[in-house]
Amino acid sequence: MAYAFTNSKGVTYYLHTKKSQTSTGKTRTLFFFSKEVKEGTLDAVPEGYQVVEMKTGLPVLKKTGGETENTSETAAEAAGE
Image (cartoon, rainbow, N blue to C red; front, side, top):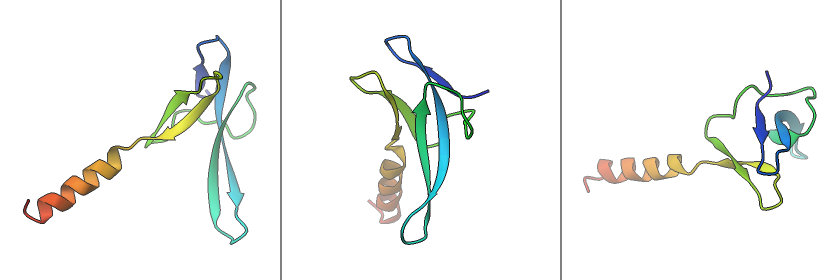
């Protein structure tokens, strides 16, 4: 079952993913929302991301900032602070 997000206007969007290759040859994973279920749907929001609704009602994935804070705290503890 595809992950569905219903915005404040009552429109349902489904989360999809697509692999893309950059001009330098690296593989990049793209996440996007669509009103229709198509090939490449995801069952859940990827770890480290959260769904945020823009002012226009479109949902977007946003990286959660928790990992950066934990890393800096661990570095401070290792330094003996």
